[in-house]
Image (cartoon, rainbow, N blue to C red; front, side, top):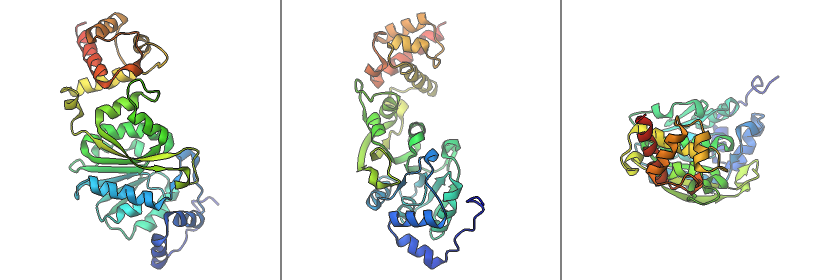
Length: 313
């Protein structure tokens, strides 16, 4: 008999009230036992169980977003963060991809009429189409195996967000805050410089903040998106913004190589070597530099130069 076919616990309202009154650690242990669940490594299921951290994250969402803003939680898991968010008495959509966790979550969240639980893979959801007439506040303990993908998607959505509060690996937090020349500097760093006004640490989280404990430390971050990244970069058109991101990806495609060679070998840009040399010269950038030495402004100049030389052919 599979877990899906096993009879589910027959919990009455009093039992659910007891569950909601428990600490996240005690509730998580009990739910895992009641529903015969085991954390799935393939889904990076390290459940947040630090109650103070969960409360701090929920309060950061409340403080940094409007009362009519829709809260969107990524990865509700077993509700350690969902429950303090639900207690804000604001509209909340909680996404969870694991059907086994959804059953337990659905039971816990019945007491909160403002919460919608959605069983879906967040990486396959068109978030840009979610509640298009509303502002968003995005929150979540991001799964380690797709953190970079999710962060880039969220930053691209940032113009619709009052705030983004996420828990990520400490290494990822360093990459977001890195500056040109830093060892951790890369595509994520430039995306953060382009899309975000500010990256602030809310709380450091050791492995014991999670169950089971991961091998790394984590950080809860408050990300303040720019209202208009294109305007902040000098008034880029949507096409120029797409070209900027392609240029950045090309510049970091082969980190050990020079900027010229990395971009020439990349499939992110449709450009000849002669055009590339012309674009580098027009932008005033030495092609023998490496991508990690360029600031956002340098990449903007280079992308605009690439646009000019490729349009002229």
